[in-house]
Image (cartoon, rainbow, N blue to C red; front, side):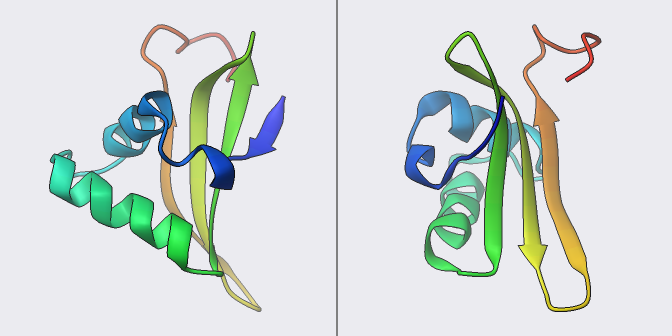
Length: 83
């Protein structure tokens, strides 16, 4: 199931996936990225949920005429399964 993750931004699974999609995987960089998804109306984080667990994320900055993908990640244990 594909869901908006705005209410789950603090979960450890979501944080790990956001960090996994970034060049800078530090906690400080992850905190800054999570804050952008939390505070900016034009940043959206969506996730793929299987058996109640977030196993993939896609973050985007949405503009009127285009979208900028901010990061895509799939849990390492779920990769190669079509997520």
